[in-house]
Image (cartoon, rainbow, N blue to C red):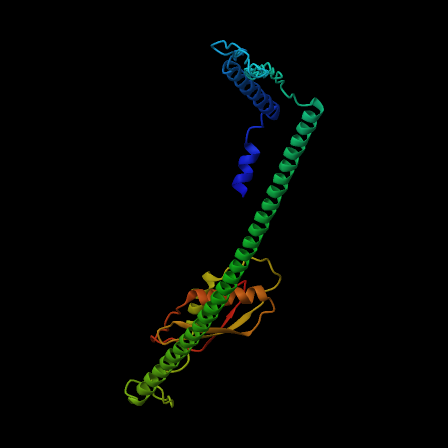
Length: 318
């Protein structure tokens, strides 16, 4: 229906005066047919010739003689009957002249009214086509809107499902990471405990091997191979190792002291450090702890040992 509407809309306009031309053509053909019929009838009329004639006897007859004996009877001469009068044939009436056919021309008012009616029908048809076109366009737009809403709903549903899958996947990954982190911490703690246990076992073994390698004097009464204290210069050496790593440039009044306890492994690796006595200046305390962490390894004492734990005191103006 839409294609037919488009063809009617773009079709050429009808030729004006079509009905008038058709009526004139029909009248002209009727006039020509009447003229041809009259001509054929005029040529085919017969020429009638009328005549009159009287019939008489061919031989004349005489009257008979009178009888003597008897009185003569009157002789009646035979009367020859006259031939019947033949009435002359009536003359054929003259051919009736066919009236001249005149074209039946349409009334201008009627033609104008028909033209107006045709234009009105064309206008109504065009309006109806426009209405149909608008209705179809509205239906198309409504259908398109419904399709868009449907597609949007499908997309939202897909997005919701995708978000749910992503959230579930993320939750599973977070749970897996948390489990792995817990396992790592447990493994690290187990390694740390095993390391401490190995150090303790080694110390016990060294203590139980005897006193042959003891380094104490003749009057020493201890049971260890070596004295637990450090040499007099060891603390200074430790501070000298850590001090260059202290990053502190603030100008302060006084000389506050920060006391720190440092724990190390037998090879001198720093295990932990904590502030046992703050200096009252947090910036200085933090700088000292960062310097110890940065140092990582402490030097050995003169006897090859690393004292742990070791208490160190740091002041900004040493």
